[in-house]
Amino acid sequence: MSKVKYYYDHETLSYRKIQRKKRTTVKYVALFMLASALFAFLMIFIASQFIESPREREMARELSNMQLQYKLLNKRLDEAYAALENVEERDNAIYRLYFEANPIPLEQRRAGFGGINRYKKYEGYDNSKLIVESNKRLDVLEKAIVVQSKSLDEVAVLAENKEKFLAAIPAIQPVNNEDLTRMASGFGFRTDPFTKARKFHYGMDFTAPRGTPVYATGDGIVERADNSATGYGKHIRIDHGYGYVSLYAHLYNYNVRVNQRVKRGDLIGYVGSTGRSEAPHLHYEIFKDGERINPINFYYGNLSPEEFDELLKRASLENQSLD
Image (cartoon, rainbow, N blue to C red):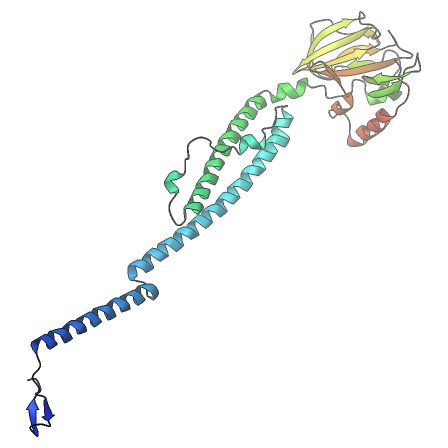
Protein backbone atom coordinates (compact mmCIF):
# COMPACT_ATOMS: atom_id res chain seq x y z
CA MET A 1 0.00 0.00 0.00
CA SER A 2 1.44 3.31 -1.05
CA LYS A 3 2.13 5.94 1.57
CA VAL A 4 -0.22 8.98 1.82
CA LYS A 5 1.61 12.28 1.95
CA TYR A 6 0.33 15.53 3.50
CA TYR A 7 1.29 19.17 3.49
CA TYR A 8 0.47 22.01 6.00
CA ASP A 9 -1.90 24.65 4.66
CA HIS A 10 -1.19 27.96 6.38
CA GLU A 11 -4.46 29.49 5.30
CA THR A 12 -6.64 26.84 6.87
CA LEU A 13 -4.15 25.98 9.58
CA SER A 14 -4.61 22.31 8.84
CA TYR A 15 -2.92 19.39 7.09
CA ARG A 16 -4.14 18.57 3.65
CA LYS A 17 -3.54 15.42 1.58
CA ILE A 18 -1.18 15.79 -1.40
CA GLN A 19 -3.01 14.89 -4.57
CA ARG A 20 -0.55 13.77 -7.36
CA LYS A 21 -1.82 14.30 -10.82
CA LYS A 22 -1.65 11.37 -13.29
CA ARG A 23 0.12 13.58 -15.81
CA THR A 24 2.91 14.28 -13.36
CA THR A 25 3.25 10.58 -12.54
CA VAL A 26 3.57 9.67 -16.23
CA LYS A 27 6.18 12.37 -16.64
CA TYR A 28 8.26 11.04 -13.77
CA VAL A 29 7.97 7.48 -15.05
CA ALA A 30 9.03 8.56 -18.52
CA LEU A 31 12.05 10.44 -17.19
CA PHE A 32 13.01 7.45 -15.08
CA MET A 33 12.78 5.09 -18.04
CA LEU A 34 14.81 7.44 -20.25
CA ALA A 35 17.48 7.84 -17.61
CA SER A 36 17.61 4.07 -17.15
CA ALA A 37 17.94 3.52 -20.87
CA LEU A 38 20.71 6.11 -21.18
CA PHE A 39 22.52 4.58 -18.23
CA ALA A 40 22.20 1.09 -19.70
CA PHE A 41 23.48 2.30 -23.09
CA LEU A 42 26.38 4.04 -21.40
CA MET A 43 27.29 0.91 -19.47
CA ILE A 44 27.07 -1.24 -22.60
CA PHE A 45 29.26 1.23 -24.51
CA ILE A 46 31.88 1.27 -21.73
CA ALA A 47 31.76 -2.51 -21.51
CA SER A 48 32.21 -2.84 -25.28
CA GLN A 49 35.27 -0.61 -25.15
CA PHE A 50 37.02 -2.19 -22.21
CA ILE A 51 35.51 -5.62 -21.73
CA GLU A 52 35.78 -8.30 -24.46
CA SER A 53 32.93 -10.64 -25.10
CA PRO A 54 33.63 -14.39 -25.31
CA ARG A 55 33.19 -14.20 -29.10
CA GLU A 56 35.61 -11.30 -29.36
CA ARG A 57 38.15 -13.12 -27.20
CA GLU A 58 37.81 -16.16 -29.43
CA MET A 59 38.28 -14.08 -32.58
CA ALA A 60 41.25 -12.29 -31.03
CA ARG A 61 42.87 -15.66 -30.26
CA GLU A 62 42.24 -16.83 -33.82
CA LEU A 63 43.76 -13.63 -35.23
CA SER A 64 46.79 -13.92 -32.96
CA ASN A 65 47.24 -17.55 -33.96
CA MET A 66 46.92 -16.67 -37.65
CA GLN A 67 49.60 -13.98 -37.33
CA LEU A 68 51.86 -16.45 -35.52
CA GLN A 69 51.30 -19.05 -38.25
CA TYR A 70 52.18 -16.53 -40.97
CA LYS A 71 55.36 -15.62 -39.10
CA LEU A 72 56.26 -19.29 -38.84
CA LEU A 73 55.42 -19.72 -42.53
CA ASN A 74 57.76 -16.87 -43.46
CA LYS A 75 60.48 -18.39 -41.30
CA ARG A 76 60.07 -21.69 -43.12
CA LEU A 77 60.13 -19.80 -46.43
CA ASP A 78 63.43 -18.19 -45.36
CA GLU A 79 64.84 -21.64 -44.66
CA ALA A 80 63.55 -22.97 -47.99
CA TYR A 81 65.07 -20.00 -49.84
CA ALA A 82 68.42 -20.59 -48.10
CA ALA A 83 68.41 -24.27 -49.06
CA LEU A 84 67.42 -23.46 -52.64
CA GLU A 85 70.11 -20.77 -52.92
CA ASN A 86 72.70 -23.36 -51.86
CA VAL A 87 71.55 -25.73 -54.60
CA GLU A 88 71.44 -22.88 -57.14
CA GLU A 89 74.97 -21.81 -56.27
CA ARG A 90 76.31 -25.34 -56.71
CA ASP A 91 74.28 -25.72 -59.89
CA ASN A 92 75.80 -22.57 -61.46
CA ALA A 93 79.32 -22.77 -60.02
CA ILE A 94 79.90 -26.53 -60.22
CA TYR A 95 77.42 -28.60 -62.22
CA ARG A 96 76.70 -26.27 -65.13
CA LEU A 97 80.28 -24.96 -65.21
CA TYR A 98 81.60 -28.53 -65.21
CA PHE A 99 79.49 -29.42 -68.22
CA GLU A 100 80.09 -26.04 -69.91
CA ALA A 101 76.41 -25.04 -69.71
CA ASN A 102 75.57 -21.37 -69.29
CA PRO A 103 74.71 -20.41 -65.69
CA ILE A 104 71.09 -19.40 -65.08
CA PRO A 105 70.94 -15.69 -64.09
CA LEU A 106 69.32 -14.75 -60.79
CA GLU A 107 66.75 -12.58 -62.61
CA GLN A 108 65.44 -15.69 -64.35
CA ARG A 109 65.46 -17.75 -61.17
CA ARG A 110 63.60 -15.10 -59.12
CA ALA A 111 61.20 -13.82 -61.78
CA GLY A 112 57.73 -12.96 -60.51
CA PHE A 113 54.43 -12.98 -62.33
CA GLY A 114 53.43 -10.07 -64.55
CA GLY A 115 50.07 -9.06 -65.95
CA ILE A 116 46.91 -9.55 -63.89
CA ASN A 117 46.95 -8.92 -60.15
CA ARG A 118 47.04 -12.46 -58.73
CA TYR A 119 46.60 -11.24 -55.16
CA LYS A 120 43.53 -8.99 -55.43
CA LYS A 121 41.42 -11.48 -53.48
CA TYR A 122 43.65 -10.94 -50.43
CA GLU A 123 43.22 -7.15 -50.37
CA GLY A 124 40.88 -5.19 -48.08
CA TYR A 125 41.66 -6.97 -44.81
CA ASP A 126 43.55 -5.83 -41.71
CA ASN A 127 46.41 -8.24 -42.48
CA SER A 128 46.28 -8.02 -46.28
CA LYS A 129 49.91 -6.93 -46.60
CA LEU A 130 51.15 -9.90 -44.59
CA ILE A 131 49.01 -12.35 -46.55
CA VAL A 132 49.93 -10.87 -49.97
CA GLU A 133 53.67 -10.81 -49.25
CA SER A 134 53.63 -14.40 -48.00
CA ASN A 135 51.78 -15.59 -51.11
CA LYS A 136 54.16 -13.65 -53.38
CA ARG A 137 57.19 -15.25 -51.73
CA LEU A 138 55.60 -18.69 -52.00
CA ASP A 139 54.82 -18.20 -55.71
CA VAL A 140 58.37 -17.01 -56.47
CA LEU A 141 59.79 -19.96 -54.52
CA GLU A 142 57.61 -22.42 -56.42
CA LYS A 143 58.70 -20.93 -59.74
CA ALA A 144 62.38 -20.97 -58.69
CA ILE A 145 62.05 -24.66 -57.77
CA VAL A 146 60.60 -25.38 -61.21
CA VAL A 147 63.52 -23.54 -62.88
CA GLN A 148 66.02 -25.43 -60.72
CA SER A 149 64.30 -28.75 -61.42
CA LYS A 150 64.56 -28.17 -65.18
CA SER A 151 68.22 -27.19 -64.77
CA LEU A 152 68.98 -30.41 -62.90
CA ASP A 153 67.16 -32.37 -65.63
CA GLU A 154 69.47 -30.70 -68.16
CA VAL A 155 72.53 -31.50 -66.04
CA ALA A 156 71.34 -35.11 -65.71
CA VAL A 157 71.25 -35.41 -69.51
CA LEU A 158 74.78 -33.99 -69.70
CA ALA A 159 75.90 -36.37 -66.96
CA GLU A 160 74.78 -39.37 -69.03
CA ASN A 161 77.70 -38.60 -71.35
CA LYS A 162 80.06 -37.82 -68.46
CA GLU A 163 82.40 -40.76 -68.99
CA LYS A 164 82.66 -40.13 -72.72
CA PHE A 165 83.03 -36.40 -72.14
CA LEU A 166 85.81 -36.76 -69.56
CA ALA A 167 87.67 -39.31 -71.65
CA ALA A 168 87.58 -37.01 -74.67
CA ILE A 169 88.96 -33.85 -73.05
CA PRO A 170 92.75 -33.52 -73.45
CA ALA A 171 93.85 -34.13 -69.86
CA ILE A 172 97.42 -35.46 -69.79
CA GLN A 173 100.85 -34.23 -70.76
CA PRO A 174 101.70 -35.50 -74.29
CA VAL A 175 105.28 -36.40 -73.30
CA ASN A 176 106.19 -38.27 -70.12
CA ASN A 177 108.07 -36.24 -67.52
CA GLU A 178 110.94 -38.75 -67.39
CA ASP A 179 111.48 -38.28 -71.14
CA LEU A 180 111.70 -34.48 -70.96
CA THR A 181 114.94 -32.56 -71.19
CA ARG A 182 113.04 -29.46 -70.10
CA MET A 183 109.80 -27.57 -70.66
CA ALA A 184 111.18 -25.02 -73.10
CA SER A 185 108.38 -22.52 -73.64
CA GLY A 186 104.80 -21.84 -72.60
CA PHE A 187 101.69 -20.13 -73.95
CA GLY A 188 102.06 -16.36 -74.38
CA PHE A 189 104.49 -13.78 -75.76
CA ARG A 190 107.93 -15.28 -76.45
CA THR A 191 111.06 -14.46 -78.44
CA ASP A 192 111.05 -15.99 -81.93
CA PRO A 193 114.21 -18.14 -82.34
CA PHE A 194 114.70 -17.08 -85.95
CA THR A 195 113.68 -13.41 -86.09
CA LYS A 196 114.36 -12.64 -82.38
CA ALA A 197 111.13 -10.61 -82.45
CA ARG A 198 108.62 -10.81 -79.61
CA LYS A 199 105.48 -12.60 -80.78
CA PHE A 200 102.69 -14.69 -79.35
CA HIS A 201 103.40 -18.39 -78.89
CA TYR A 202 100.11 -20.33 -79.16
CA GLY A 203 101.24 -23.62 -77.64
CA MET A 204 103.72 -25.28 -75.30
CA ASP A 205 107.16 -26.65 -76.28
CA PHE A 206 108.42 -29.83 -74.62
CA THR A 207 112.13 -30.46 -75.21
CA ALA A 208 113.00 -34.15 -75.58
CA PRO A 209 115.39 -36.29 -77.65
CA ARG A 210 114.44 -37.23 -81.19
CA GLY A 211 112.26 -40.36 -81.19
CA THR A 212 110.72 -39.74 -77.74
CA PRO A 213 107.15 -41.18 -77.69
CA VAL A 214 104.24 -38.72 -78.02
CA TYR A 215 100.87 -39.75 -76.61
CA ALA A 216 97.26 -38.77 -77.39
CA THR A 217 96.00 -36.57 -74.57
CA GLY A 218 92.34 -37.62 -74.93
CA ASP A 219 90.01 -39.93 -76.84
CA GLY A 220 89.24 -38.84 -80.38
CA ILE A 221 89.65 -39.32 -84.11
CA VAL A 222 92.83 -38.44 -86.03
CA GLU A 223 91.88 -35.53 -88.24
CA ARG A 224 95.25 -34.93 -89.85
CA ALA A 225 98.63 -36.69 -89.96
CA ASP A 226 100.76 -34.87 -92.56
CA ASN A 227 103.37 -32.18 -93.12
CA SER A 228 101.35 -29.83 -95.33
CA ALA A 229 100.75 -27.08 -92.72
CA THR A 230 103.27 -24.21 -92.85
CA GLY A 231 105.77 -24.29 -90.00
CA TYR A 232 104.41 -27.35 -88.19
CA GLY A 233 106.34 -29.94 -90.23
CA LYS A 234 105.06 -33.44 -89.57
CA HIS A 235 102.11 -32.98 -87.27
CA ILE A 236 98.95 -34.68 -86.02
CA ARG A 237 95.57 -33.19 -85.23
CA ILE A 238 93.07 -35.14 -83.10
CA ASP A 239 89.39 -34.15 -82.96
CA HIS A 240 88.16 -35.00 -79.46
CA GLY A 241 84.60 -33.80 -79.96
CA TYR A 242 82.84 -31.24 -77.74
CA GLY A 243 84.75 -28.53 -79.64
CA TYR A 244 88.23 -29.75 -78.57
CA VAL A 245 91.12 -30.39 -80.99
CA SER A 246 94.74 -31.13 -80.02
CA LEU A 247 97.77 -30.57 -82.26
CA TYR A 248 101.23 -32.25 -82.06
CA ALA A 249 103.88 -30.62 -84.27
CA HIS A 250 107.52 -31.05 -85.48
CA LEU A 251 107.26 -34.85 -85.24
CA TYR A 252 109.95 -37.25 -86.41
CA ASN A 253 107.37 -39.84 -87.46
CA TYR A 254 103.72 -40.93 -87.09
CA ASN A 255 102.20 -43.95 -85.43
CA VAL A 256 98.61 -43.29 -86.56
CA ARG A 257 96.69 -42.62 -89.74
CA VAL A 258 93.86 -40.24 -90.66
CA ASN A 259 90.39 -41.22 -89.38
CA GLN A 260 91.88 -43.63 -86.85
CA ARG A 261 90.15 -43.63 -83.46
CA VAL A 262 92.57 -43.28 -80.56
CA LYS A 263 92.31 -43.45 -76.78
CA ARG A 264 94.00 -41.22 -74.20
CA GLY A 265 97.55 -42.49 -73.67
CA ASP A 266 97.86 -44.18 -77.09
CA LEU A 267 101.25 -43.77 -78.81
CA ILE A 268 100.62 -41.52 -81.83
CA GLY A 269 104.09 -40.35 -82.92
CA TYR A 270 107.64 -39.41 -81.99
CA VAL A 271 109.40 -36.17 -81.11
CA GLY A 272 111.34 -34.62 -83.98
CA SER A 273 112.44 -31.26 -85.38
CA THR A 274 110.61 -31.06 -88.72
CA GLY A 275 109.20 -27.81 -90.06
CA ARG A 276 110.06 -24.46 -88.52
CA SER A 277 111.97 -25.82 -85.52
CA GLU A 278 115.31 -24.96 -83.95
CA ALA A 279 115.83 -28.24 -82.04
CA PRO A 280 114.05 -31.53 -81.28
CA HIS A 281 110.89 -30.80 -79.30
CA LEU A 282 107.13 -31.26 -79.33
CA HIS A 283 105.00 -28.19 -80.02
CA TYR A 284 101.58 -28.86 -78.47
CA GLU A 285 98.39 -26.84 -78.94
CA ILE A 286 94.75 -27.16 -77.86
CA PHE A 287 91.80 -25.62 -79.72
CA LYS A 288 88.35 -25.06 -78.22
CA ASP A 289 85.64 -24.15 -80.71
CA GLY A 290 88.33 -23.09 -83.18
CA GLU A 291 90.19 -20.84 -80.73
CA ARG A 292 93.63 -21.66 -79.35
CA ILE A 293 93.61 -21.93 -75.55
CA ASN A 294 96.38 -22.38 -72.98
CA PRO A 295 97.25 -26.10 -72.64
CA ILE A 296 98.57 -25.52 -69.09
CA ASN A 297 95.04 -26.04 -67.78
CA PHE A 298 94.77 -29.57 -69.21
CA TYR A 299 97.38 -31.66 -67.39
CA TYR A 300 95.38 -32.70 -64.35
CA GLY A 301 95.27 -36.32 -65.56
CA ASN A 302 98.88 -37.34 -64.96
CA LEU A 303 100.68 -34.64 -62.95
CA SER A 304 100.88 -34.32 -59.19
CA PRO A 305 100.17 -30.91 -57.63
CA GLU A 306 103.91 -30.39 -57.11
CA GLU A 307 104.72 -31.31 -60.72
CA PHE A 308 101.97 -29.05 -62.00
CA ASP A 309 103.23 -26.10 -59.90
CA GLU A 310 106.73 -26.59 -61.30
CA LEU A 311 105.38 -26.80 -64.86
CA LEU A 312 103.32 -23.66 -64.30
CA LYS A 313 106.40 -21.72 -63.11
CA ARG A 314 108.46 -22.76 -66.13
CA ALA A 315 105.63 -22.12 -68.60
CA SER A 316 105.16 -18.56 -67.28
CA LEU A 317 108.74 -17.55 -68.06
CA GLU A 318 108.96 -15.26 -71.07
CA ASN A 319 111.88 -16.96 -72.79
CA GLN A 320 112.72 -18.01 -76.34
CA SER A 321 110.48 -20.53 -78.05
CA LEU A 322 111.87 -23.33 -80.23
CA ASP A 323 109.60 -22.67 -83.23
